[in-house]
Length: 121
Image (cartoon, rainbow, N blue to C red; front, side, top):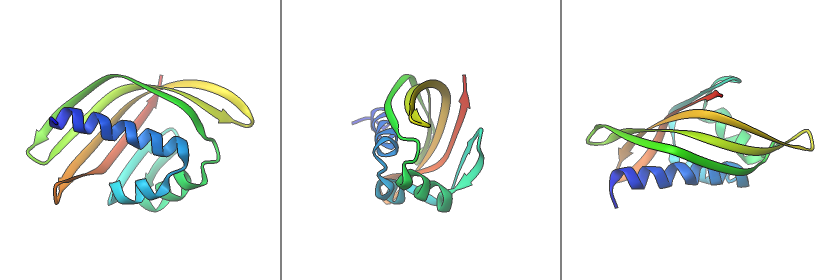
């Protein structure tokens, strides 16, 4: 499997875990010093994992398109794409799109999430 295909699959798994409230997956993949930037501000792992686990606004469906991978170094790369999300917010299905970028670092032969950023379209 190429680095590009491996990271595209990992990014899809991150969204699956978010949809399903799988905080354990985030606990394993997200590095301790990782950051997420979105319209809600900047969050670290200590905020990210419990929020995914709570799953208060569950994502019902996520479609990723225009995925591109840029290898930064031997053990680092970024994934950028457009996500179309259907979520249950205040008991109503709502659809929105984001442009997203994630940065990964390979440690002990495993890819770890270091940074994720979303901008609503």
